[in-house]
Length: 318
Image (tube, rainbow, N blue to C red; front, side, top):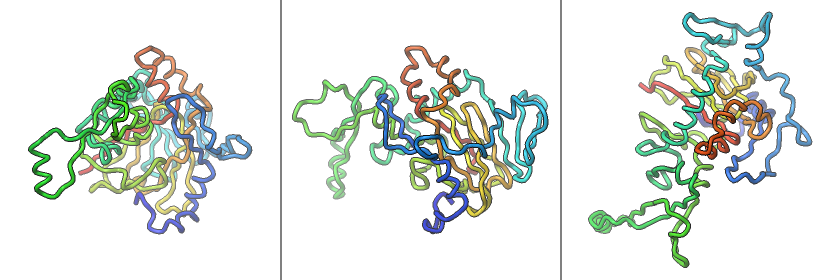
């Protein structure tokens, strides 16, 4: 249920109203130039009313009783508390589950390793398999379209009446001949367009959501009895947890880098989504990441993290 069967009806639901209330989208800008076309949830450039957003990290630091409707579990052998909503069984929130070093490990893997072939990304359908995208973007290379040099394949395509296939490769600016007509795209632009990569069973997620992860239920798996684990990295966001229909008012909560959410049982049937990412304000939230990624080798990763959120989603398909 990643898409609504009646988009007009979906616009009138309680979940959609909550998305509009909190939404703020600023496209990541890896070149450092400011973007002015984004509008915040509030009025006149403020952050809007965030008083109703649950902050589990604040609860972690606070002493005393928990707010009504929120429970806490301390698991043997696990040094982090696990929070839950008493009226929404199967949903568990672990604030600060990953150390700064662990977060950096998974951020590097998400940008450098996960998009590597044979893993599929949202760019695969357009450009085919692209190797070393992160390195190419870091070195300011350009992706160019070149003719397939495989003579046998070209003849086979010709005989079958197919269009001649094309390949893409990364080159330096200086390697492109003046006056040469070819399709080109800067690697840094492709990094901004990278939305997802999939490991294990390959799946085309572009058919089910776009740039922002709107209200949906994870129903692609054959077996819903297995939980889904989500690891949040980079910029803080607002996460909405709704009901089994979009008509139920969702609960909003902050998700920060290193937080983990687990959805099992009934929670698997609940609509959820991320309407807002804090890309420029509250950079203090990721100060530990900034310090850890301050080396020269990580400067490109650092700039990416300051403007983006990475979500690692772990699921058992069969």
